[in-house]
Length: 121
Image (cartoon, rainbow, N blue to C red; front, top):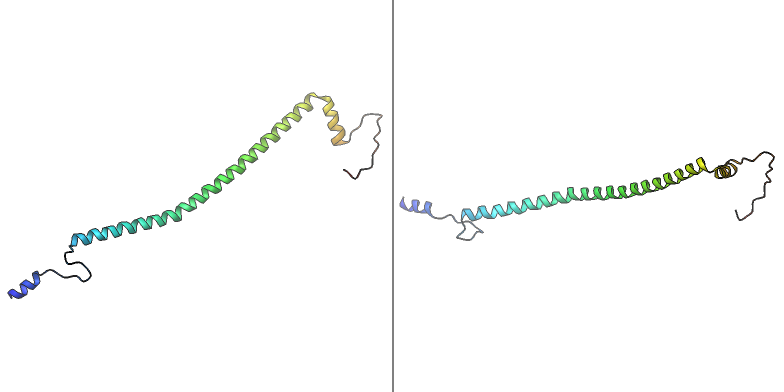
């Protein structure tokens, strides 16, 4: 029986491991594996979620640029219309010009002679 007790106390040999490997080293090694695996999984999740966010941000910036350009063109059109309105309110010569050119109006006892259109127009 003494021989069997000694056999029970003998260190367990593990195939593939160095002879002086301890359990704590195995846990440390598995902790590093888990740590690196976690880092890899988080990196893959970041790539999947992060690129979508970057593309959305880029698309939103492009849309913002287009809207700012449209706002600028609308402001210039508004300024032009305000200028025309102020001229129509105060300048009777301009009112007459607009009435003749845009609406084909004429004065009393005035004749309009239509001219043939040239090929340059």
